[in-house]
Image 1 (cartoon, each protein chain N blue to C red):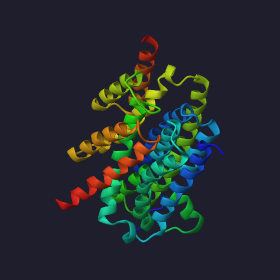
Image 2 (image 1 turned 45 degrees about the vertical axis):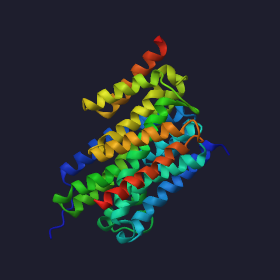
Image 3 (image 1 turned 90 degrees about the horizontal axis):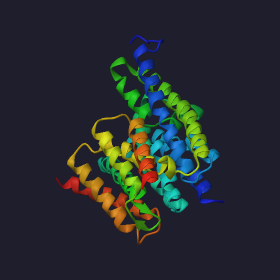
Length: 102
Length: 226
């Protein structure tokens, strides 16, 4: 079976397990101050790492290409409080433009 | 206490507007997933069965970049922990068991929990309705839009030519941006980016991303001492 299928099945099982545990386990077991603190910070670390890796790497190489232009526009759009779809579309347009004209 | 049988109109309005807006992000996920090498069916199954945006984006991002299925699933799983915490918040409100609990768990996400908690001034009944309406509403639109995005991306072909390869990190940035409220989060974000890029030439794909979870642990334990 391909990695994508394992990814689909594994992620679905793990995601549901956490959701169901939350509904079944008494609050005191998971609602520990430390768990709450780590839980608030994990998405910040992982999502930031994903932004960096998806923008600036290709396999094992670190590089700057058309995607960086897209990300720069996304940062600008978010700073201007643009809604999510606008951010994503603006980044795609600028990246595609840079890709075609460089 | 008076039991209100009709759902307050504002609860319905809140639930529906959030369902539609958030569900529309599904188009970005469907497109990103196909661009990362997942099939249309696999993309739709992720939205149907995983039904948690950040985890879905993460698994296609990691595997699409050449990471192993394990590292993709671990990254997605770490992002899914918060749904467990949401479950603990809403379980005492819903008081359901059996099949209903399975359904409730499946639609326990940022938005259903958020709307449920925001209805507190209107009473437990409104909170409960807000949870179910938003949970099923987002589920419906998220899946419809995932299919649309996946089919669209499939028709486009080369992801770079349409900017899809930049749309994915832009989507991640959009997900993390609202969480960068204080200096601590911003420092963590920049450090995580640097660590992930620094490890990229030396570690297997996916590992640089997972390793930043340890940074989060480190930052959380530093906070305790203050």
